[in-house]
Length: 90
Image (cartoon, rainbow, N blue to C red):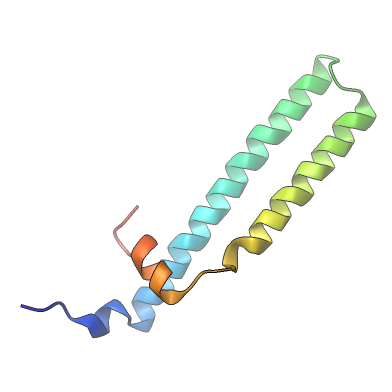
């Protein structure tokens, strides 16, 4: 029996695939933010970084992570969404 190809490309399955991809990007950016800013804060608390350098690093990592979030949609096609982020696949 052949799989129902119309269901694989239905708007609902594309919506779920895009949602899963978005949540994966949010999770990755959140974890990166926590790790980077905790390391900067820890180094500053131990006196390894000056307050000015710590603030520059904090703001720089924040801007970098925001830019990473903005690039998330580039090169993202419906076919890629269905293959990589299909419902039920983690």
